[in-house]
Image (tube, rainbow over all chains, first blue to last red):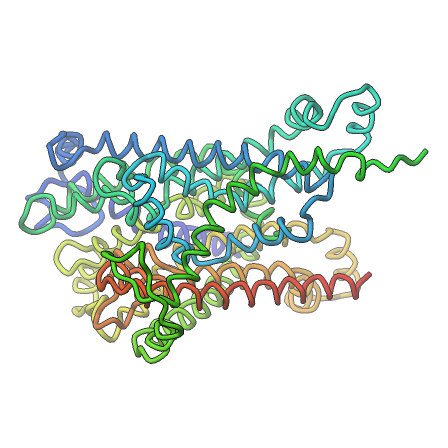
Length: 273
Length: 295
């Protein structure tokens, strides 16, 4: 009896938590005519028309560009963050450099409202001609990803036995060599986790995309809202739904496939950070 | 054999940490400096390079701006409410559903899905969900109850946003609590069962106290994220109706981009910066003192 109740609660929670995604998915398959008469979840005559419209490139709307921008800046913001964090994490965990200054500062960074840095960064980017460039947005996403990457990597390196380093030192290796040849291969799971988590975070970022890009480097989270006003008149909800699904799908699929790694890293950031 | 390893290797370790430190100096140190300078200057978009020192005028204009206090109050209330609701709901689901999830971990993947969607997109999705003509929620309310409300209207916008935020981030607390719950050694459950403790007693006196640190961490993280909320609120209500749903992040954004009040926006940023770092370092100090006391 209690098991049935548990399944019932699970079903309610699964539907309630995923409700916006379910509604959007269903609406994306409705024709404009069906939409006006049937706001319910069930689709009577499914159509791909909305998706066809989304992938039509016009001079004002280009979904391929937005997706490409999101992909590039997310990859850049993720790889650069790990590349910067890994050597620093090694120095913090083994050399105890900045353990009481750098580490807490960066961990706290994760909790600071990012808008604080947004305005001076906007002006700085104006001087450096980085506004509306993928490079500029990628650099900012690196900052967004750094805190969690650093926490995950410091914890991973601390868990490695220090004897490995000592043995390699005896063999005449220097710290950089140890980092590249010993630590990096052993930390691969933690590195992969930071990459996945960073990619999802970066793909889903909105505030800096909104502020720092206008046309050439617009990511899909910002570009999606362009479709809301696409036709001049009212919102074409079928098309708007299709573009939201397209924009939300990559991180959702990644999350579904990799949810074990992600759940691990979320708790790492929460419990140890 | 004791070698003074850390000392001999210190320069090498410093070198390894250098790229990160340089990156932070350029992308955070410089902006922080700009923030400080502009916050005490009179500056417009035309005079960005020639800021004129005006002392605390910007801070005073923030201090006397009713919208600033309204936004602070919104952020505080929003952060506290969503954090508490998310933790209560997450705690219930984690404990009640754990017998199901233990055996089928893919159930957790379904519950975690909202965390993967951009909050900005979730906000846009709710514009559809709550739409008075094409949205399913008003439609079902009309069909089954014969009445619906204006979800983003003056009286209800705040509560709608609280529900939107809570539904998206409850999976986060659920996940955290589920892991903490699983980490409780099974001997403890067995021992207390032998002592005749009923499951509710066990929950209240043993399991919840053991999950205490995780609950505190989840409350803090969710409060911070709720306090600095921007994406979903911005796309759902902007700041309306009548500025009633402007968070501090939105206040600063609008001061800068919509009003062009650079000085005011930057001064508010500095206030927020100092306040958040003070709170965070205070909490860190508190946490490490408690750790020290335990040892």
